[in-house]
Image (tube, rainbow over all chains, first blue to last red; front, side, top):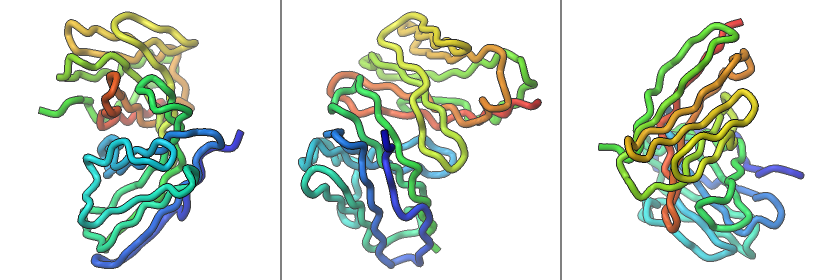
Length: 115
Length: 110
């Protein structure tokens, strides 16, 4: 079974530029999560999708971050404009169902450096 | 106060040692407790999952939950160099998002 795919793996941009990350979840997984993991911290949930609807985006900085999941499969996360404090690893995860008990499978992440 | 506190380490042990990793938490509503392992430049992977209080064993790994003390532990027996990674505790409850600890970096020396 193929895992969660993310691209790009690494991205370096200057502040105020825009950037987009892509995620392809495990086939059949209805729930998709985007996490931000700052160096030395645990992952923090940015947004959770159930199919193509948003379940939780309470910690998404909506003035600069946006995310979509068209057709309930792939998802993109965008930052515009980027700030220095956005430097982090952006992890995508998926699970079969949106239950707190269901296993989340993580992708390798996209490491973003904002200069 | 953070919802989940975890000592970041690093923790360095010789091969074969018993490792103890711990987290404390403040939200008594948490019911589901997880340990994830994260290798360098990889995403976290679920290692152990426990519901409510008690112990759970899986091979060399044992997870313990003490809800009365709001304290969870992961024990690794006969530690191997391949166990060198960052270990993240995580917890949630029905209708709650999963909250992760900061992770403890573990180094097992051959």
